[in-house]
Image 1 (cartoon, rainbow, N blue to C red):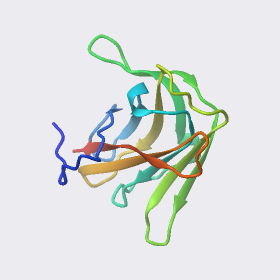
Image 2 (image 1 turned 90 degrees about the vertical axis):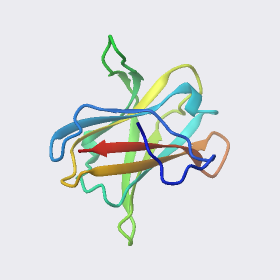
Image 3 (image 1 turned 120 degrees about the horizontal axis):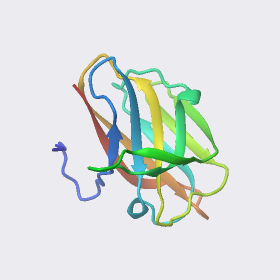
Length: 153
């Protein structure tokens, strides 16, 4: 069950998966970008990280891959790492964001992709909403792709 304070038509709920949802535990979080989430080829992906998500992010613990989304009988796993540059930004108000620059554009085909975090969960439990934006090929601006709501107990 997912609860949104502001049920807006412009809000797009994206799929995600995490191995562990307890506080302070080692975790692997998959933020999925399925074929239906991408309308065009993407040159850049931006992930807005909630201010209250107090966990250490390091470039070497972040990856971007082509993924097989698991289900009842199979596990979620990366099939192929996508080479990309990662840039973690923090502005003066404390907001963090992650920019992902793949070496070649992410095609709008039938493959699913994932941003993968290998982190320790924050010490505070709660709901954390991550927003994603993508820069389509041929455009100079990013547009909203969707949001993930992560639960930490």
